[in-house]
Structure formats: structure tokens, C-alpha cells
Length: 237
Length: 356
Image (cartoon, rainbow over all chains, first blue to last red):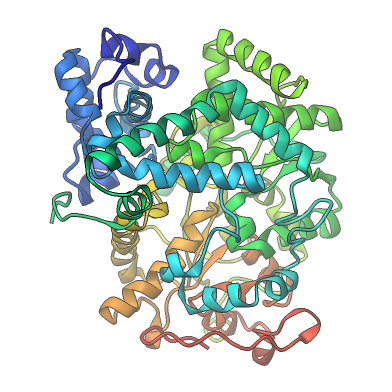
């Protein structure tokens, strides 16, 4: 899919991002971030290299990065921020790179990047429908069998179990898992509309639909594959 | 590290925590997975300690998990947070306490970014007015709920019915403390004890009679990783990180783990179940796992609350070995009863990890 809103210079675009301003200073390539990084141990991932590529200011290399799996390996734990001797935040640089990749539609070019579609649907759906990032109505045991037989039992007896725990599930007034009043949900929707949240959902869907078509898949199948499929090319071991 | 060194670091990283009048906001994950912990926080702070903890039903998610899953722009999460601050302002409070560590980190980051870039704060104020017709003051004090329990730990100890001591041997129980990454890794000065040697949970353990376990991977992430858990294809990342921590703590034979993050107790509990099912390996004695508790659950045990009122039945790793070591009295048959002792059946037993 042709990108009709590609900026003239990707590095200059990154420099407008406040996370980038906070997290990108002069990197001395010491590799402390990589040594401490949980993702670097699991994936073929090296935050030192990412920051180094960015500081070359080479647009071609930055574009390759934005289209790669690499930028999606980070878990945003921010362990790198604590240890960097130059006060860089590689994790913050990653957030800025991901944001730009999403805005430009480059995320669809990688397996891990394409996961942004189901993630967007899960997270923004929960926020706009319920006012929570995670909610019992969408966190299904079938999708989370690692939550164990105790969680299967809990979800099968959800209302009784939550009442036993002292929750006010879907109830009025304050309390645990209360129903967020409709006027508050309306305010969240207005915030999404004013701040680009709604537009971001539309952009992610637009580029994902185009990619699904390119890959010869219907949209539902594309989203399911993005959520579930994992090739073996990502791992260190 | 020698003890004096740790104490020096801890004394350098102390924060002012007002003693009363807090505006309380809940955690998305904790309400789902450890609902009774939030119930216990308000029970202990309001009814045992007599503190003013205010909550409005109109507060929502802070958007932090969606933000760290890269699904919403920075201005969106900042304006959601601005609305939370507006609700605090309208209620007449200036001390703000979130139950969630992702939220706590989110608030710290946003306040710091606004401090560095006042033009961004001005833009967010404009966004909030356009969207909600609200205005806000920034909190005068920001603390995490674990900071408050830490602050009141000695008052809790003074009312303790049980101590973190093995009733058979008289030895202090060995407790692993696991701090959520976003508590202080980004802003060490915002956490009690800093980022490298946080004291917030260690202080509770010591005050309640236990002994803190130091082990090589103490500061390693539990493996949540936001998108690394919420997307099914990525969950190997999450279990691998938990596995690394358990392999590292195993030689120290911990009696329990306590955490201050919403996701960490869930992952450290559930991935023990998965590791056992996949490999047959368990990390506790006699085929059990190592119980993983929230700090409110541990405070509730110390204060002598019924373990099933604390929600310990929602753990996959059995907590009974810990309760037995402490000498706590409880009714095993009541574990899975519903409200008013209603029979709501029982969970199936896992194949490999022992459960009661």
C-alpha cells in the first residue's frame, strides 16, 4: 500500500516526539541496556543497536527499523532507563519508533507489528466499552488457559465469586469492577476524539485491511493469525 | 552489598508520605485478578487505621496498559490522566494514590514530562477542556498504595495477630519481595528506597517478623511486557522471564513471595502452574509451588483476617503451606464457597502442581 503521508525526514519526525526528546541523548554504545534487557535474552534483540541506528540519522535504516519485527520485541519494563550511564531511555525511543510505525502504517510489514491490530481492538474496546483496560467480559478463559483451572472455575461462577471477593461487579456507585457511569464513558470517547485516539484506531484498521487484502486473507482471519501465529525466527535459543 | 551500604541507599531515597486524606484510584488488573486485595486495602486503611480514603465511581482506567501496548497516542493517555486529576480536584483532595504500579509510573512520567515541557501540559489542559469541560490541579503528593501500607507498617505490626515466623522452629520466614518495574526504574526518587534496592516491601517484611531473601535476579522483570502477554503468540516471553526468576530464587528456599504490582502476582503464580504442567518442576516443598501474595493479602494474614475473605482461593498456587507455617487458623472446607456459604463447586486440580 502506498504511503501518502510519509514525512520528508523520519529522524526529524522522531525528534518531535516527547518520549524521544526525553529518551534520546548521546549513546556511547556501551551495551548496558542490552545486558539488563529481559527482551534481549529471549528475542534476537539488541536495544543498543536500535539506538545506534537511530543516531546515524540515516532515513533508509530508520525506515527498515520501522518496518521490522525488532522494534516490537521490547516489553517496556524500562529496566534500561535505570542503568544507562548517559541517561538515555532506549525504552522511550522504542515507544516513539512504534508510534511512528503505527502512524505511517509500517507496522503491517512485520509479523510482530501486525499484532497491533488485535491489541488495538482489545485495549481500546475495553476502554471505550467499559472504562477499563482489562475487563471480565473480554478476558476469556479460552484465550488464557495459562490462568489455570482456578480461573476457569472463577469465570464459570463469575458473579458469585466476585461477590465473595467484595466486588461491586457492574453495580452502581464506587467499588471493585463497578459499572463506569455512561457519562464518564462518554467523556473517554470525547477524549479519544479530541486527542487522536479515535483517529489512531482508524489508521491501524485502514493499513491492516490493506495488508490483509495484499496477503489474500479476509480481515477476521488476518486478525486471528496476527494474535496467534508465532514463527520461530524471533528467538535467541 | 554490606548492610550499611543498603541502609545508606535507603536513607537517600525516602519520600514524604502524608498521613491522611488520600484520593484513591483503582487498578484495572487488580480488580480483575485480585479483587479482594483492593477490598482489603480500604478495609485496613479505613476501618483498622481510621484513615480518610476517598473514591468516586466516575474515575476510570488511566489508560496506562493501552499506552504501553502502543495502542493510544501520548496525548490520549495524558488527557485521560488529566481527567482523573480533575476529579480529584473537584472532590477537594490533593494527595493522590493509585492502586496500580503501571498507573503510578504513568502518573510519574506524565508529571515529569509536563514539568520538562510546560507547553505540552498547556495543550493537555486545552484538550481536557474541549473534551470534558473540566480543569485540574496537579496532585501535591503522589504515592502508590504500597507506599501507604509501608508508611503504616508499624501500626499494622502493633495490631498483628500473626507474625512472619515459622511457629514450629521460631525462625523468621524467608520472603522474596518483587517490585513492579514501573514503581521506580524510571524515576528512582519516586520510590521508597530507590530503584536498585527498594525498601517499600522489604520494610513490611521486616516489620512483620520475616526475613528478606536477596537473590541474583531480584530486580528482573516478572515478564508481563504488556504486548508480550496480551497477544497470545508472545506469551513465551512472559513465562521465560518468570522461569528465570524462579530458577534464581530456588536455592534460597523462599517461604513466600510478595509483590506490589498488579500483574506480577498473577504471572509469578500462574506461570508456576504452567511450568509445572509443562516440565513437572515445582519450586516449593513436596510438589507445592511458592505462594505469591499481594502486600494487602500479607497484611491481612498478619492482622488475622479469614484467608478466604482475602481472596487467597483465587491463587493457582496453594497458600495453605504458608498459612500452616505461620500457624494461622482457617477452615479448609470454606475455601471455594460463594457469598453466604453458597456451594459454587470447586476448581479442577492441576496435573502436576499440588493444590489443597
